[in-house]
Image 1 (cartoon, helix red, strand yellow):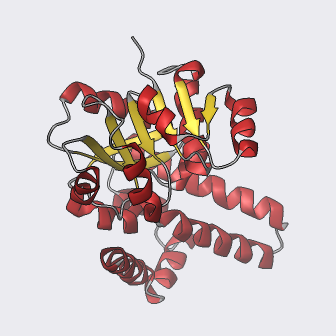
Image 2 (cartoon, one colour):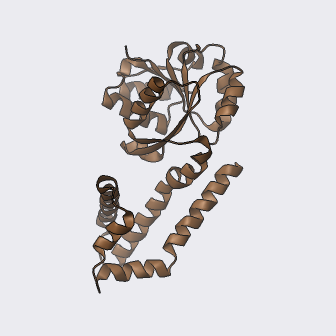
Image 3 (cartoon, helix red, strand yellow):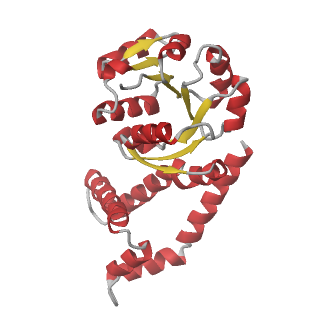
Length: 266
């Protein structure tokens, strides 16, 4: 029997998740219900996915086997207070807010609740998320596998200790911005060299995509793959040396450390 999935909040990330779930066939659209703030948002979701919608969070709490809290972190207290007396002891609550600790969520519920902390990144919008998952101790292996399969429907997953979520934010949560900047810089250089901007973005983005796929598919060390491109006295090694002179590696490391530090202090 397929479970009923409930989304409290269904913005860009929630909608990306819903799309992946439906496409994978893990759960059909008639077994997904989402609550939204406005009737307009609800109607848009119904048109796009054919799912059930409501503006009543309590309806989600009473009907769903797995509830995704897809609202902003500052809204967690109010939402949990609204649903905590309605959900059953078997309901799994999945948080999608890295800055909200499991212990804090549990204390807000004021009782033992099955919790799974997650964080997908924005490439979920194109079915290529990297998601971190951390279950509470009362989640069974079967329950965890089910939730992992849901997240795998719109990307890839990795189980992490909760303490590592700050590092995950720096590595995956924020890194799409770093990559977009890299693609933009590559395209700017290509435009300077005479390539049309629209073509430059496409060429740069596909090169980044293909390079990432090589790392995943070959499982070779990135340094080894880099060496494969660098011929003696060739063009690539000249570019690599210039990037090293500019402190590319140290800049990325420092930026990620700043990101992690900010996450810890929020």
